[in-house]
Length: 409
Image (cartoon, helix red, strand yellow):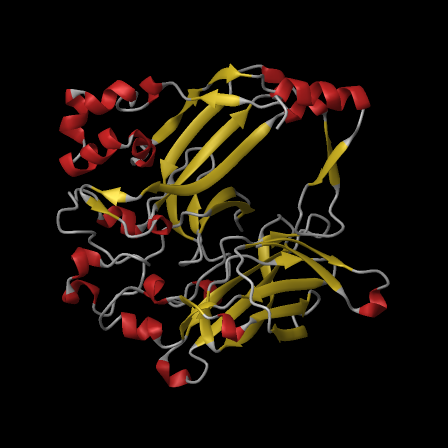
């Protein structure tokens, strides 16, 4: 609640050192010391002339807006101007200099920040039924050493197959492809028959090294495999299989939006749903857990996998690691395991078939990091809604076998 300058003054007065884990995913992660000046609020502004149009308050009543935005959408924005912030982003592949309009960029702040989120939640007049369906849009902010140059901004859509399929679509007949919460062609039966939800690649980013030794950026969402991008140009290069084609190239395999990496060992852990064929009943749904380790050139190599049978399709968004364990939660926000196949025949898409079932409780699974064997698999009678796990810490002495898990519920 303090004004940023006052906050910095008080912190400097007390000469306190503030630390934060570089990777909260590991209990023994190294800490980085942040100077008090880092806590000052910085507001960066991308000049409006970098975009195709100047979307100021007057823009929404201008002839340009009437020519570019469907009348039904524009009327809603004019009535509630905040809706203008939900309009589709535009590609900015070339770096644009940001203007600092409040505070200052700390001279020690150097590096590149990648963020990913829904950049488009409508196509023409067709508004997606849920913003989780939004097409992925990756933002890149580059901070120069010692403020030698301005902060640079880039932004680009993740050019997935579903994104390409909508090029030229005016949205009058809905989307051309099926989304997790939005049926194609305004619910037309034949357009959705046997169609699975497509991957929006709209949730998170991860930097990896490929087998060829190149640095690459991954756009992640648990709706499918990672999408590979060039971290310099933000060009989309296609799906990525973590150099494990037998696992991630299968049509029914998915990867988590939030892998966990240990900075001491370089090991990376991720998970994802696998929807198996009806002949595999009763295990129609499985949760796959993967352990990777860095090779000689820092590319990731698959070392271990674990398969966890699930009685329902549960929304698994995140996992956490301690020094010796991998921790996962299966919350009672779920769909029956045959709902995927039912949705491919008729009716609402998979995302709308999830329901809250507090009677089922919360399943907590703890695996041993060394070989992904099960250390604990319990279902509590207390129900818990969560998307993210903050951290996991092994309790000392180790003989107790206790793990403290911090959850953002």
